[in-house]
Image: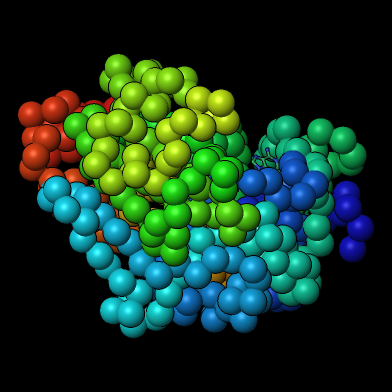
Length: 372
Ligand SMILES: Cc1cc2nc3c(=O)[nH]c(=O)nc-3n(C[C@H](O)[C@H](O)[C@H](O)COP(=O)(O)OP(=O)(O)OC[C@H]3O[C@@H](n4cnc5c(N)ncnc54)[C@H](O)[C@@H]3O)c2cc1C
């Protein structure tokens, strides 16, 4: 079927969630998978926990991921609630080790699997508007920036944190649970001190927390998380400010050759807020991945949820007039949101050393309302 034609399902966004949805539908409906990027772009430098293996197996992509040039991650070292380092070793994980991802390669593999499962692709094509069609068989008309419109019976919002389609056209509202932002730098191998190379390192500090990992190309990611309205998040925008904050750490600073920091470092920033879309789905649309629920990176749950929600929704859409499947999808995702909120509260409750600091007090003494 050519581009510009009619489809049963149009998926906007070919990140992990959108691609997993297309794979799970697997030839039972006509699917178009659309993304504004012609090829996947690099992200911060994420880890995929070993617990995701059963989901990868169900999507039939486990072997490809395992052979995909990602770096095996042997576990997590954490300085959280204690001055020393605690180890959570992958040896104790029933599903085995996870990976430090080569994100573009991971997404390219997912896109290939979506094509193999029968999806039509439209990459390098940004959807600029969508509207409900009042009459006819196809409920939706989508307009790409270039090229003819696409009609579809069902639309999937897999646009990531922007939840562009669900907010603009489906009347859904994003509920914000915090103001977390991430400021990060990628350091070339020459500015590194080789330690903990196959582990993630997480360290709590007074105004937030740090994350560090080595990517498959040998760079080290050094990432600081704090609330956007706190002075520390503002200071962390510059290499000098981020470095001053790095000196508050006990462990993360030991990974960096400080004499090379200022010469080589560029600071990037992105939102890391916890958010929930309300509602998550309707009769003729649904959201998946970050568009539906986005998580604090401390949970390491974002990619797992992207793949899991895509798998669940794809299966629900395999049945024609999939109303029962969609109800089940919504209730499962609501359960995920509830469990996530409980885990997040428990996680931040583990470190009482900074209980008087605003960042920690907000998370330990009940949640302020950030809804907009
Ligand atoms: C700082 C930080 C660290 C993180 N670390 C981890 C980690 O270690 N482990 C982990 O599991 N998760 C981590 N995550 C979360 C993880 O990155 C996300 O959960 C994951 O990328 C969500 O996948 P997705 O497919 O839902 O969305 P995305 O990956 O954002 O994909 C959305 C896609 O939609 C496309 N798109 C958007 N708008 C349009 C449009 N109008 N038209 C066409 N295409 C469009 C985009 O080009 C993109 O390809 C982290 C997140 C942050 C912010």
